[in-house]
Length: 243
Image: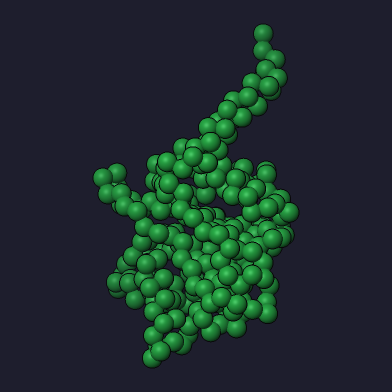
């Protein structure tokens, strides 16, 4: 399984993803699920992937190949005029890959994949999209300022309760680490290490990127501190009036 989050702030965009892929309890691997294309001063594009591993890798590889090979640059992620057109390109690539991977008579659902796309192209605003396995997509807004893909239910409550568009990147990182810690504790199919990336509005370059390992001291402090805080908050609540 997978857990990935793209978060929209007034300051820019924050992305976080796990790296665990499993095809059963005895087949667990680590694969990067966060991908980026950067032309400093021109555009920054970040893509998070969840779903069938062969499909997600094929989509990313095809997008990457078309951004580099001169003979096959159209359509290219590095030439789209807007983030909307970029989302359309990713969506059409998903449909192309799924169609080519689906044998006659077999359901396409088995090859499905979903993506979160975010970034900024010079002269336009930063934007964030959720792209579905069918290739259609929706865009984040003030009412829906973040997207999750993969194993979403365990990490969503803390984001819903604590998110603020005025957050700093440091606060957003803390929020997402609590969200991921909750998911890691509840579902063994989501695992370390975690990839995290900050994009600052109008910078047109990656501001900060890191991989968070299982031995990361800050992540451990967040995990332990959140557990302690939850126990303390629970103990402070009034007991049920039962005699």
